[in-house]
Length: 164
Image (tube, rainbow, N blue to C red; front, side):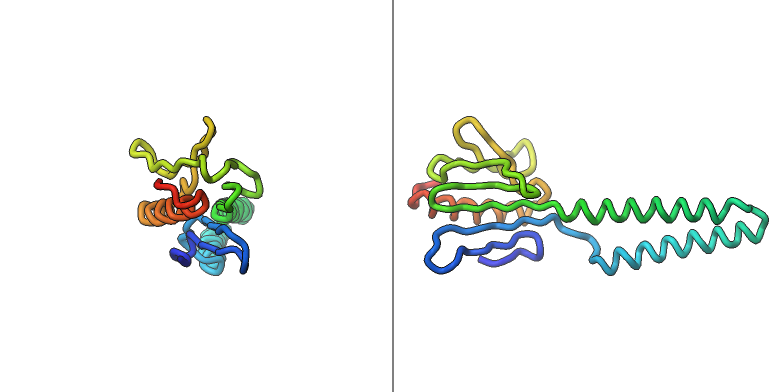
């Protein structure tokens, strides 16, 4: 199995190692270059309006444009950084680990892990021994379905082929 767009990447372990890793990234609407072009377009339009305002006698228009440009830059930077959050799901013969931003949010032996695709809410849930964790909450329906198929297969492989 390979990647689904840039959203799900399945990385097999090295030669002789059992297990697999799945890297999940939120989908992005724009590339980094398109984000820069968007900022340049918005800031350019704001500075054009500020220049016309200044020529018409509004002395505070350039100050407003400066503050507005800084606010737009911060908002776009935050939007870009929110796309960097991701999840790593490592499925090995002895452990299933889910990490978000470097922080472990779920860990259990694969034999005891149950996967649920809930009808009442989006996402896929892994549970074991009273603990549960959602994975892929930011994925769309097609990606969630692909992730569920992958997880079902990889969990069955890791737990000795037991029916899931």
